[in-house]
Length: 247
Image 1 (tube, rainbow, N blue to C red):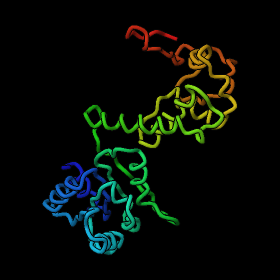
Image 2 (tube, one colour):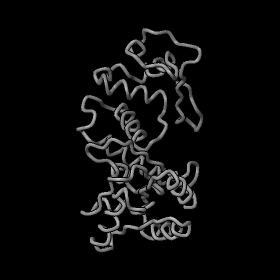
Image 3 (cartoon, rainbow, N blue to C red):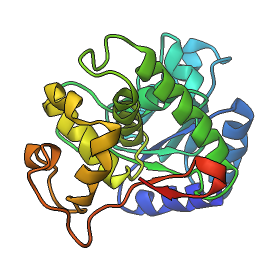
Image 4 (cartoon, rainbow, N blue to C red):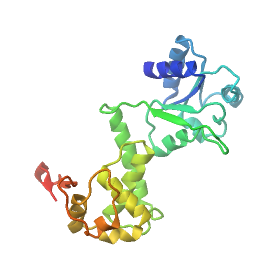
């Protein structure tokens, strides 16, 4: 929370305001108190408040001439009729990961409106290599499964390749650095779904060995027309007896 307060203070000095999303209304209240202790003109928007009260705060927040520095709210506010935060704000912070990727995506679209000219910038404040990642992983898996099982998604792709595409889509949505080789495969399949039959267990490792990060994966790679290279990608299978086995 201290990090978020410091970020808002820096953006205030630049004449910018910030929209912050958290999971719980109690967190929003605590953060709002901290912001005010830092001398910031911040406000909390809660789902249990009267619409008129929330509307007044949001109206001021959307007014570039009003000295509001931050509004703190929960993902739940986006599921009810009422607050629309776009207007004068173009900076956002996701302080905590939501329970569902759709909530995160809905939140990061909250500052975007038709005809907008200024770029919106979002920052995720959940911390890598901590328990935050447990929630992050749960959200990712849930979203991947939803995409994988949706017949309308990637209708020409079957089997494990659907999983590669789904993981790639979710990684991009969550702002993750995607797996290099499998992301290249996903990008190629999105543009050339008919090439799916070329990716087999017997050819995947060979395709990878002819490609390296920084290159564009092409149909020449997929059709095995290019030789393996010394610094090509080596795929491993970690399933057998807990030890990695080169494919």
